[in-house]
Length: 332
Image 1: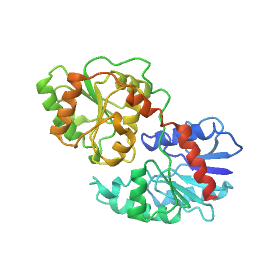
Image 2: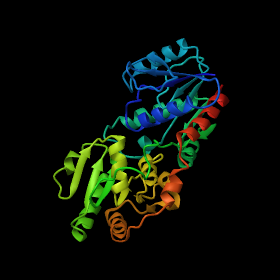
Image 3: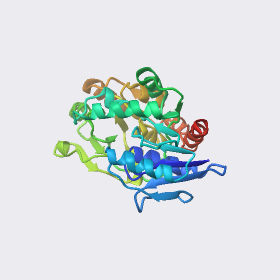
């Protein structure tokens, strides 16, 4: 089987982590399948992946045409779009990964984002021979809201770098890891921290994954911005807890990474976060009072637990790759 994968976002956060983890695990699987990655020149592809150089603007008509032409020329048995944007592939069968429906459910800074996402999501579901997603919660939404058929759940894995063994960042701090989009609800976390700081002045809040310039001058808040995986692992290990107050998530990869590093985790009651973390995390309403209460409880009574590490061990890129290959074969 010859599989083409749109890897243009391989260097990004989020979907980039998914592409890197999946490609690395697919080439490690037994079998004689061939994998072709469509990506810009110099993309960090694993050994064993055929590289077709393609670069087209994201979220444009041009990418639909350019990517579709490249897929048709590559003599593929199946093409995998790791995001909801599916090119014009002609007769080449398509598998698409839809990570969440946040664009349809949550406020967007760009007023056209919801219209674009809605149109492309419906097109993707209609064209794909198989739809992949990363949690049962999102699978149910895809089937209920978009009428998706033949949906495969292929949970994310985590980088082996995220373990409890290794350097630990110093200090008493809570940690947030992620972008600064509205649904991430970072403002509610900052409000909660103000309450925590009033009771425990030595505690700080570290915000990673975006610049967070609007919080940079707030007392007790540290904004290192984008960090490497090694730096993030050290932050996870040393944190009182990772806090993810999202209004909605498709999976919640930082929660699993933090658990693998032995950190306590506090999340909202978003369905996917509860599904993925199970009883290894504290789940609260994504509001300042509830978040502050959970943070104070952990700061005052924190004790190591093996639950998180056991839970995180279930999520591997090998498992994701095996489930994904099964979906490819069903599509062919």
